[in-house]
Image 1 (cartoon, rainbow, N blue to C red):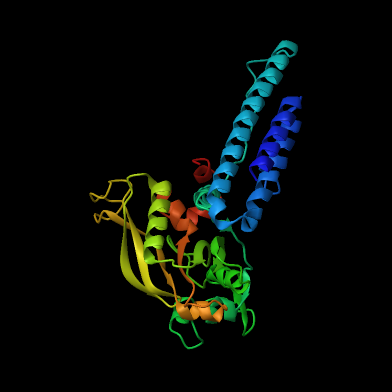
Image 2 (image 1 turned 180 degrees about the horizontal axis):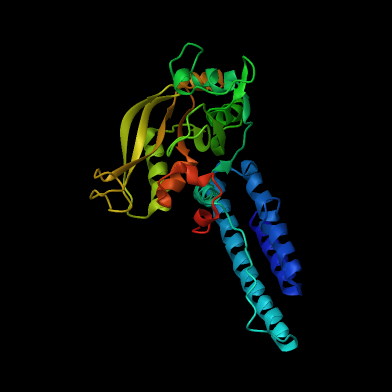
Length: 339
């Protein structure tokens, strides 16, 4: 894998060096850094890499991406400068004319937050898995230890297409699909859009995004869960961030907990942002319920695991200090320009 990444980097740098126009440099960016680029293809192949090698491969991919981006950005800057200098020599500029405003788009704050979360977990050896938004009731509820008469179904009132088909209320259903494949161990995160029939307000929406995580292996304990999420919190909110776990109940995990992080505005002392408590609730987690493992064909006597789920919008709201979730969906250019 190291040799392949070196080849990708060498070929990308060669093409950058040989480019004589901005269009060609943009082609290089798409071919190597885009959604269907060479490095993205390597990340999608992480599931074929041995579990113990994934952290190293993830780090190598991030380093390769950073080196290519650095050289590419510098080449674009120099080429734009040359083009500008050439125009100044050949064109007469009327400085009394109003300037033409060049409006360039950029990534949405939710996309920025998602890419940061993905980078953190890929660096820890996880793979990113996607699942269907239109799901069967079995995968969305029953396979997660939520039978037809369970009260948790009322809490997740959703949009049904037929009696058995619905818009998923959580990306946990993607975890069930992966467990049923029987390829162990599993280290994955599943980001995606989910749906619930909630009223729109500052903190709720009928359509939002979740990031679910799942680890299945031999001898996995709550200590592994705590260490993983503590490292995630430090990477996302700062090295001084501390975490605490409060007992909770989720049908698909036992024991279950909610995790809080120290307020990154006041360092845990208490302020308006954390309502004077010094802590901010960030996600739910727990050890995978043995019955959930059994329903997916995994022997709970041999394997154990942990799962966690965090709302992407909540990450964006907290990290960028946004006080109304609706701002993320309204496409107000005055708001988006701040990012």
